[in-house]
Image 1 (cartoon, each protein chain N blue to C red):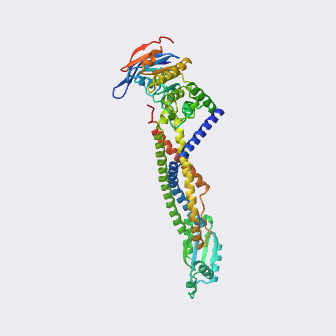
Image 2 (cartoon, one colour):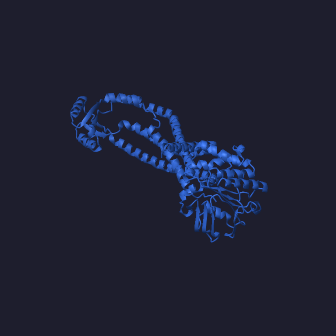
Image 3 (cartoon, chains in turn purple, cyan):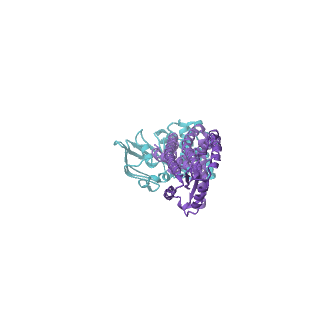
Length: 309
Length: 224
């Protein structure tokens, strides 16, 4: 194919693409309904995905690092606790050891929990001294962390230990299930989009039966006849994807204020993040391909059945 | 140009649309095909345009054996064969210009070339002033002329017409026939199916007469 041929080929595709867009715009209501159905169907899994990644981001701070909390016995004094902390600081497998003084802990708890009155009624500080320990990164596998945990349980000063990894792992397991669920829903709704586009194109083929017949009579190739329908599917898919993006963005915007208020109550800086570029790209590409593929199926099935008589 | 050798077309159920028919039309001939309704005129034309394939025998058009043309190649064969129908088969949602331009658009010609040739073709059938009109607003004779313009716009070597004057009064029919004669004079091979014997009898052209799916008579042209 030489350059001139390529140019005319591109020009013809552009013409067909624009003609197809123009045809869709001339029937705005019907087009809008199809696009709306596609958009809503795609907005659902996209919105769930965005919500899920927001939740994961929220939990991201704890991601990967296992922290061990050593709750010391009440009778262990401040000095003893500091000695223990110093001992642990030279432990080869530990990165940081942080000592939390019971008085400071009580103060912070009063400030954050809103139980000020109730806590002030207590005669004695019920909080134990806590050592928060972070293992070296290479020791932060669940197995290694658990070995450390067993070791620290043997210490006489220690009342009990807690591995903060546990709930992170549970949380990960839950989000994994949710992610799988979003994927299943996405697949099902993607299939629905395929059928919607397929059915819409099928109806269009029926409506333009005489045009197809005449085109076949005057020597139009199958590719020529197929092209406008494929572009219809392309436009349906692309605009459905854009609508889905708008719907999700609008929903996030509507959710943003209450979420911020909730985050404020937890003294968190958490901010709802919008659809990221990768997700948007995937959404638009996916919806366009679904539109194209849906019309391809319809055209393949129905075009050959229309022969001039 | 058009060869039929012992051609039989049998439809499912055993009915024969055409039985053991042989004839030869040379390039530049203008031939009428006549016979009663159901004699096989349409079947014969449909075989040439590859709307159907024959059951037995051989059809050759422009030197090509039609049995050897694959399904994907049919469009290219049809570009060589202009077809005109009794009901003209125009698209009512497109202007006269766009209807006539269709074969050129399909063949992938450039825009300026399309305009030039569509205007030339419309001029030839006397409808240049109606290029922006929609077919539905034209009279029956005008619509048929648009159909003819569409069939000849890509300058196919062969033009087939199936009862082109079927719905027209004698004056309009005569005009259409004159148009065909003009095309024939510039070298187009024409095969026109009609049952209007009165119209064609004094034109002095070759006439193939079909009866009950068989070729009964082949009357040679009396003058050219």
